[in-house]
Image 1: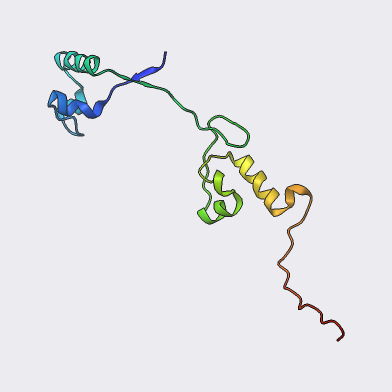
Image 2 (image 1 turned 180 degrees about the horizontal axis):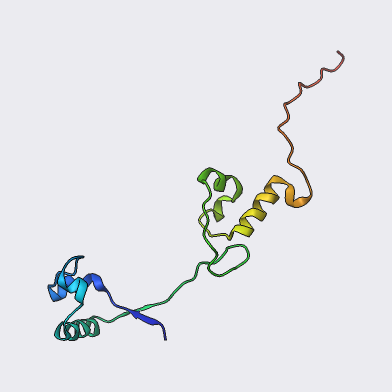
Length: 123
């Protein structure tokens, strides 16, 4: 059975209690009577099931890959537009980079070539 999340944003409004940092209720919790009132409010309103959705590498499916930072410009250069909001593990990111750079295909990256002027016929 999934965990049931309590909507704590309703707590100060419904119980008329200050639960901000530094307040008594924040550091000590609710009294038994307040807890009972809170549980009744939750029962009347209903609870929202909490389902944990894991982070997945979009390429290999690894669960909970370690996060790493990449500059935005680099990410946009190597990751195709429809996948830029997805998560990749570092190994898959490095593989995509190698493919783009030609290293993963046994090729070396070519330097930019300047265009040669078209040759004129007859002269």
